[in-house]
Length: 322
Image (cartoon, rainbow, N blue to C red; front, top):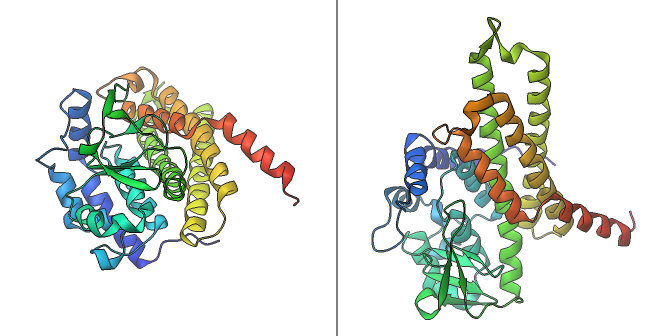
């Protein structure tokens, strides 16, 4: 399969990079870590408004509701850029929940999503990301307004707001669709996180000198970076494969499990290599690599870890003749 982006997808990628990347994204994440949340109440942040104005909040919304009419593959292009910027915004829950909405909720909610007036999330597990900040939560096959739910806040080490809504439902076709899209989105984000972490590391090792030589010229450093590069490419390729199959309406359960394995296992290897090659500066909270390490770990744990995916892949191989 050829996953080279076409002109429209490249334009989408560039627009997402322009809005999500740069120093402003860094400052936004630093404010969040300091406890000054960006606020999903009456005042939407400037970045969220810019995403809406550029049409990126409607990337997966049909044109009849004011969106761009793309699918999960293009949504993942945007989410990869969010991972590359390592900025904490509710793009993933909003975009994938919008893709999975039942028909009865589309007329009311999709135009609001496109306009940047609504944040959505989905109850895929007992603890729901952005449950308190979302305007509506997909529970089973129903999209329920946040005002109609009793949500208990949950503290997280990453600072991303989570909550436990009453009335959690484990089944439903919309929930299953949202779960698959969510998984593909997390893998795409991990591709962006690890690629940028490796780029930061490459720049550092070119400038950092020992014995009057850049440490990038040392064989051990080059080998470690090369292994990380292979992991990054595996994360990116398997994430694209799973997203493409989903976008085409083809079976993708095996490919999603493979993408989850690489995002979890390969992701932690890349950021650990990045930390080791940086030495002590890699754990400095003010140095950008720290944000990528913590986000990669959060994604790894959200996906369920590598061992769980290997067990699932093995079970599928055991029951399906090849």
